[in-house]
Length: 351
Ligand SMILES: NC(=O)c1ccc[n+]([C@@H]2O[C@H](COP(=O)([O-])OP(=O)(O)OC[C@H]3O[C@@H](n4cnc5c(N)ncnc54)[C@H](O)[C@@H]3O)[C@@H](O)[C@H]2O)c1
Image (cartoon, rainbow, N blue to C red; front, top):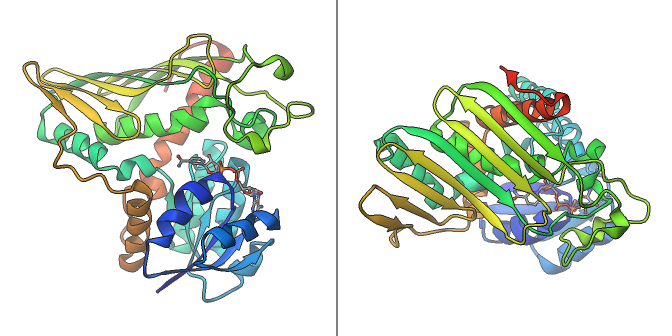
């Protein structure tokens, strides 16, 4: 039996991790922790598998029965809490992004190695069956050579929790790139089987919510953390970028908000023999120049959070790091730092 604690009882805990954990028969959730105790209490009501609620995560870290913790808190707390947990001898599954910048991510990796514990990052899409199929197609040579990848992570009106931790760079590390782009860049590097970054160029924009009170939104996810009256919004709502690697060039555009009334969430892989559009969330089409293949109907699409968690527990049991282990995903943290650095000086960077 794996005994765990979850730290942070917000959206990702309630819509993804707790439902998935409820299906893991060999897992006990000994503690649910939140600095707002009512959120932990509400989670306990909805997910009876939770045994105790606590406000201070150190209680769980001091409990020798607890083998692992899930870190499900805002980005700026990822490194501090994960490192505390590793030093207390716990395995950690920490939500994405790894941390607010690469230096902190690197420190987390060092601490995981020092503690000899598993530190996985919530790169949930890597555990989706259609993504695994595209990675396999690339290995099998069905794309020929992938020479260009284009992606869009753009919505018309979707700035999360305006004025809360998502739009305050000291708490989030950035805007749409670090929040959504992290998944897309991670998937690109994963399907390509890694790539050496050569040049990076980006521009970031914050135009539509400069004056937060005048921003017109239809629906704001993470609304409960928004503070339009007194909060901070100093992150980009739109980014465009271009990355050259030793394998393929990558063009990207991401927008939490744009005055183009379209929601486009996809990655296009352009290969010499075949190409694919991966629609974010899992489905894909693959075209080999003659026939168009939709996500094969024989691909079973299990819940990716359940698969991600199972793989984490398997790594704990075997000691073998999997595709979510920090060292296998940390390159994206570096790439995001470089994209932000390029945008800041308004110039291309050679890496
Ligand atoms: N994998 C994904 O696709 C995905 C989706 C959504 C969010 N996330 C990530 O999950 C993390 C949490 O996002 P969210 O949307 O659930 O945010 P949220 O604001 O809804 O929840 C965060 C919770 O953490 C609690 N908290 C803050 N500091 C704490 C501390 N020191 N100890 C205990 N609890 C603390 C807050 O009170 C809040 O309840 C973020 O890093 C986000 O990027 C990942």
